[in-house]
Image 1 (cartoon, rainbow, N blue to C red):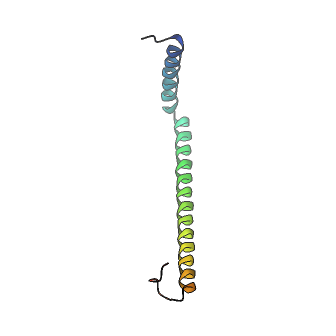
Image 2: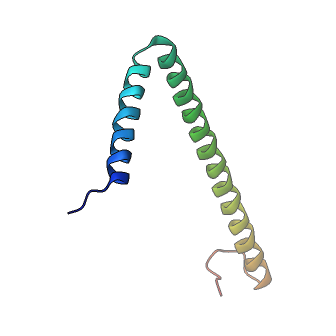
Image 3: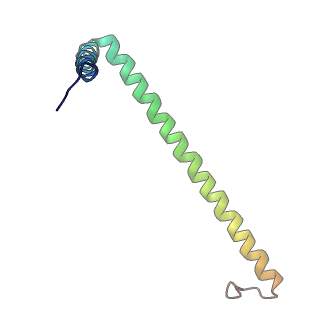
Length: 83
């Protein structure tokens, strides 16, 4: 199997970047930056989850209103009347 110079260079760059990242994260300042980024990511995830939950609730309200409107149109007051 032919490995090639490009693949060898990419492998070397990967090892170099991995080692540099490991060394950088061992410093306190880089660790604080990483913790801050993870904190912002968690807040973003929670915000998106809250927005999705609100959209689900709004959709459920719309569906309930549509079913209620359908019930009034067919002349009955119960949920049993579904056409």
